[in-house]
Length: 324
Image (cartoon, rainbow, N blue to C red; front, top):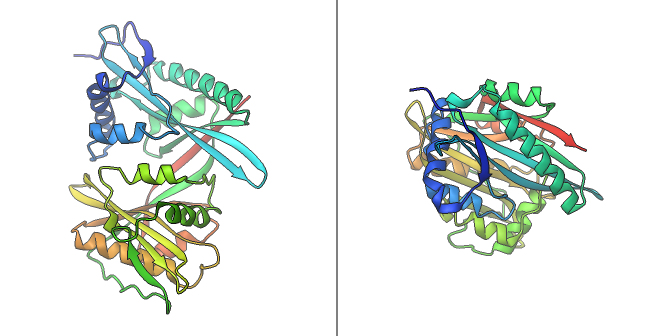
């Protein structure tokens, strides 16, 4: 039976009342795009509890069936003395509802929300959408709506059964995990100093660190820090496994974060840290190891990942549209 697209109306998300339908919609869109990871209600609750995520907006037909949803993630950007706001759009559209001009309603709603957020925070604002190359339906929508590509991001992968070097840290540097090192302020400082040179860096607060540590898939023994001779936290590597996230039936293990603090780079610390994270994922039996990287990284991250065996398998496009 064809999906009923009559009587479409938009309204805000109502919490637990809407959660089952939202879970079903997100997983339906993932299956249509070949994504094997099944999202659960606890994952969505964790995401929506982020203080930078606005209440989702839903679109449903006259019978109350959910057709689309969009969430807005606020990224406050500081580049020198310049401050701005990027409103990142996270969109799910039922596969049978695509191409029926319903997406135009979503984009129009997002534009108006971004405009109001810019006024509220008194900042220049840009609306953004990040999508994979294979999401051709969404690519057509955003290009038709005046968005332009401003950045590329790679997904890189290597097999865990390939030879894996033993991590070698410089003299005086030691590897620890967050199971035994729990200082969220020290971790926030490390993160902020490590990624300060990255595209659209956003400083992370202690509250945000504590929020991320409540993720159902967070494992403190996978959250690694490299500590220098003077006890300075010099680098980090966070490995993550989302149970059920597979490619061709094989579990993916992620290097979700990797970075070295300013002043400690080009000493082999980052390479040793990622190798340590890869060994953890290998021991957990993940056949595929993956990570994301900014194609325009100023820190040479792509070269490091290639040096330890990763190769690009997917490309994501970061589209933006300035809001006047």
